[in-house]
Length: 444
Image (cartoon, rainbow, N blue to C red; front, side, top):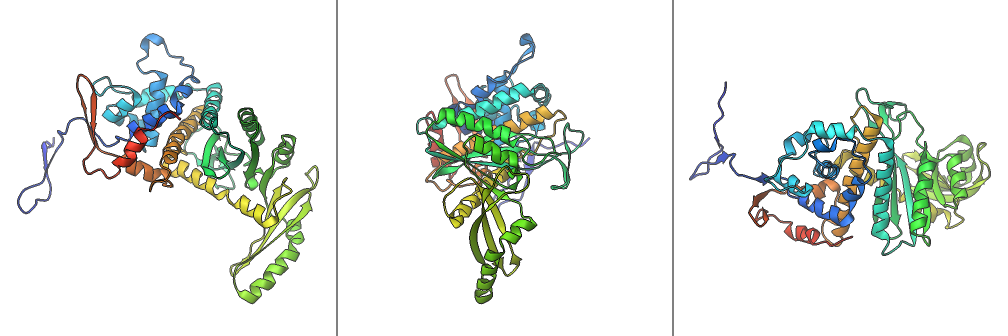
């Protein structure tokens, strides 16, 4: 058996050796978990979510309350520990214990088996209540200054699955076995980024617009109850280019702008604008875009609708695009530019999947995976709240991964005395002014 020395010698300096020793005491590499707790208190997020979860455990045997389990799991995800197995290594971390609400000298947090058993007890009713609570947090944040206009961006994405997972099927478009979550973002006109307000997990073999109208109706109803004077509009890609979506939006008096898939008839109608674009491109050699509009009705549509055409010609070839809308204004070019702004929600989805690993849905039960998706969504809400409070600073538009690196992954020494708990950050830490700003943020 190999014996490990307590000291680890590295490269020497010219005058002295460099020795590493594992006796630093209560240290953490994730002091930013305390900021997450501060933001959480500002939003009242985990307290609201905890009220939505029915605790079926025997009270006499409960060591970790639902609120503690939620905080532990959500803060871990935000800090970059998306795997439930990470809990076994982090349950004694002093910063995470403090953030959850436990002193460093108190008992450790929940283990991986405890968290996994808890996640797998969650059912569809609790998932629905949690979704409503997350939307309510959004409404609560904006009640002081109700928006005059809201744009809803609805988009589907793929979450690749591995192993025996309920309702995970092969999807031909993505060429993989997957789930197909549907995400809803809301942006107040001219104010900040798109905020996540809905996350619905769906089987992997459905159309991109499956159950979209049901989710849109529920969201729009709550938004109109909270903001009766607000004008709400829908913007989406071709996954929602379905007759039931058009008809449903018109019944709701909800204006929409949706990408329309190309077909032979649309390309035929667009030929006059394509010829104009080709002529200009032949003269200039540069990329040309010509915009037009026409009335169009596919066989499955109940009536004709306004369609915007972008006739684009460039050195790589022709690229006609189409958008269907219920709006009478503005002119075609301005309306198409408005549709193109939905590229920013795609960046939000990338953050969710790449930075917060929201596609890590590896439970067997479908509803356990829906619950996991909502946990990742809650972690994203905290990170979005952090970014909003950093407006006007160098991190105002930073990606989630950058915010985590600069503000959460901070080493600290944590000492507990009789009267208080001391958290000592490095003297050379360069972002303490932003830490100070976030820590002093009052109620939302």
